[in-house]
Each structure stands twice: as structure tokens, then as C-alpha cells.
Image (tube, rainbow, N blue to C red; front, side, top):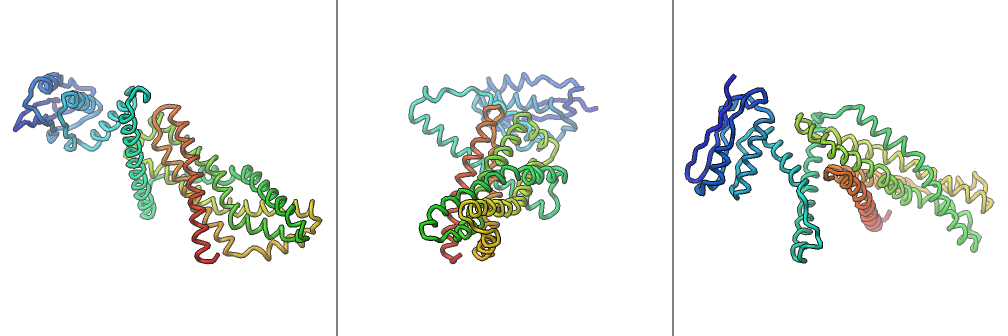
Length: 375
């Protein structure tokens, strides 16, 4: 077994650290104290790099040693180039750095001057934008791997998510859709009674549910229920370092965790929307039969005559878009969550708020587009 060794050489202000042998817990690794001393006492050192061409095996022992060298160099304002190290070492170093950064205490915002607080807010916004862009790119690559049949996730996870997003959501979708249908019919009945046009309550409820309310109410229900659950689940996995374990094992969390959730919710939303349309129309029928003395065949025939396929397809397409927004934002907030219980709660809250705002904005865009094309 090659013995572990560490050597240094200084050329033109660059300290090159050569690592060789087996850096394993079972071996006696060399003490990097001479490297620390050189970094603190040699003013000629302006940069640090690594050479691992003679490294034969490594584990966390090497990562720990490199991390300490990196920390000492940063404390002396010396840049460290770790790009030449093995990919696994680089990834574990990034994890260690992020954990150290999240554990560092932050100054209370009230103790900072206004300019510093504005700068901190700008940094947070920029960091969030970069993380969101990275998530979009990773998700796009994951979908690309799915198209090529290269994505790695368990079919059982997709099945569980389909059950969670579909069958388990039926009770709350039924209740809200029935109430929405009842409210629409009641409000319409009060006004239409003055003109003796009660029968048009069926038109009002049928068109409103299929074109607008079925998709929107389903999207908002799923934002509060499923989107928050996605954020909380993935945030808890961040706290328990389960996503880090997937990275270390070479498994993409986007394939394994994000992709099944997006596929399941986008796949189930059209069915939930059509179900919500039907239940809402039933709610309108209850008011029509109970308050307006309409017969069931008359109400049904008037509803069928009022609803056209473009309205139904518009609601179904909207539901797919809303489902993607709910799943995407829920997973994004979950993957962005910090590593504490408070951060998980904030991620779930942010997922719900962001999703509802996104649904309303996109629904407004749909209204403008439909007005332009004449639907």
C-alpha cells in the first residue's frame, strides 16, 4: 500500500501541494502543519494549487486535510485552486463550505447601517436568482435525460406521487368545487330571478366552471396542499442531508426526487380539473333544483347546450400549466431550503405564496390571449 505523503514547492508565488499515496482512515496520514505554517508566515505565497497525479486512494481523510488547508489560505487572503482535485473531493469541499456558511452566525439586521442592509438584500436577491436559474437548468437537463430514457428514479416513487396528487386530493377538491358551484349558482339565481331568466343559471355555472373556476380552484387547492408538501418534503431531506447523500452516491436528486413529483402533478391535474368541473356543475344543479324549481333534465340540457369544447380544452390546458407551476415552485423552494426546521417552514410558506401569485398572473395572461384569439 503506497504511504500517504504531502510535498510543497513554490514557483513564482504559487504554492503547489503535491498529494500522493493512499489517504485513508486506516493509514497514518502526514501532518499538514508545515503547510499551515508556510501559508501564514511566507509572504511570497500568492496562490495555492494541488497536484494529485500520484494519489492512489482517498476518503474523508483527504477531504478534511484539503478543507483545513483551504480555510487557512482563505484566512490569509490567498486564493486556492481546487479544480485539479478529483470531482468527488471538490463536491464534498463545496458541501463542507456551504454547511460552514449556514452555521455562521449573522449580525442582527437592525445593527447594520441602511446601506449595508440594502447591500445584503441585493446579495440575497442575486443569490436567489442564481439558485433559481441553476434549478431551471438542472430540471431541463433532467427532462432531457427522461426523453433519452436516462433518468434514474424508481417507478414506485412515481406511483406513490400519482396517488398522493390524485386520489388523496379528491376529498378537498370535491368539497371546494361543490361549494364554488353552489355560490356561483346562488349569486346568479338572485340576480336572474328579477328577469325571469332562472334557467340561465345553468349556463353561468357550466361556463364558469369549465372555462375558469375549475382549473383555478384546483390549482390553488393543489398549491396549498401539494406544493407546500413538496417544499416541506424536500426541505426536510435537505435538513437530514439525504440530498447530499444522493449527490455523493452519484444520483441526481433532480431525477430521483424532482422529476417524479412534476410528472405526477402535471399528469393528474387535467383529471382533477375535469372532476372539479363536474362537481361544480352538480353544486349549481342543487341550487337550480332546490331554489329555482328547475327539473334535472332541463338543467342538464341547458348546461350541455352552453358548454362548448373550446371552453373544456381551455380549462384542461390551464390546469396543466398550473400543475407545472405548483410542482416546479414547490420543488424549487424545497431544494433551496436551509438546514433547519424554521427554514423548512419558510420554504413551504414561500412555495404557497409564490405559486398562488404565479397562477393568478398566468391566468390573467390566458384571459388576454383568449380575448385576442376570440375564445
